Length: 123
Image (cartoon, rainbow, N blue to C red; front, side, top):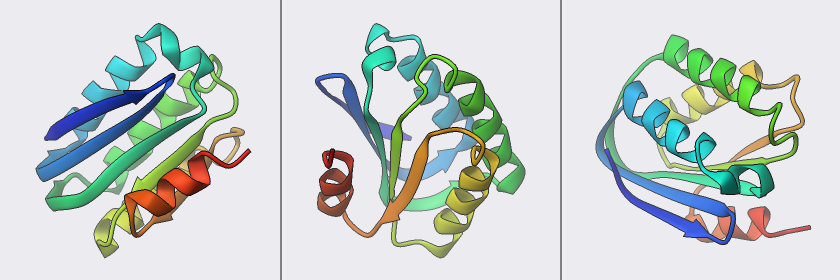
C-alpha cells in the first residue's frame, strides 16, 4: 500500500509499506500519468524499504513495464529509482528494467532514499 506520496516540484517520491500488489503500483502510475506535471518530470522514486511482502510476480512487472513504455511517449527521458534491500524486489526491478530497455528511461536500484535522491538530482 502506498502510504506516502510526495511531489517535489514535478518529481515524485512514493513510499510503500506492508504488502504491495501490482494493482497498487498501477494505481500510483495512473495518478502520475494523469497529472500535468508528468510531462516535465525528471524522476520518480519508488521506496520499497519498508515493504514486508510483494504480492506480485515477474509477469506483473512486465505488464507495468509495458504500460510505462507507452507512457514514455509523453515523457521520453526519465529516471526511475527503486529503493530496496529485498532480493525479490530487486529481481522484479530487473524484469521491469529489461521490459523498458528500448526506451530512454533509466532505472537503478539503491539501498537508501538518500542515494536515490542524489542520483535523481544529478544533471
